[in-house]
Image (cartoon, rainbow, N blue to C red; front, side):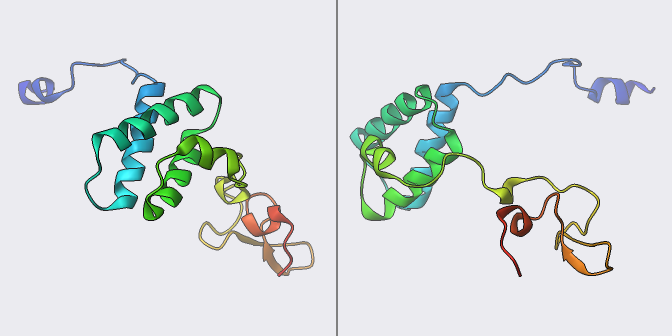
Length: 135
């Protein structure tokens, strides 16, 4: 190795990034609200949303789910995340669409050939097949 290569190398070998904390996740929820609102927001409203997000994260709600809920709230001008979360009927589990590609089918269409040589939805990772929807 040359001196240039060693001096440019990162000095943090073996350092693993820290897992996201509840504060980071609450900030992520606030950022999702701000992005969906697309205008300035008062500090009182931000504090209300952040506090509710921290409470709900502590209760076991996933951060991605809370981000989806605040994106529904922002266009309506709502700021009560507790109430919206209580009334929401959206599932808190990842949908079949979130399943990673299995590698045995087409990556983009998630289709493969079955035993009868028909081109069908992949039974391992296709959201359509996993949801039980027939095409």
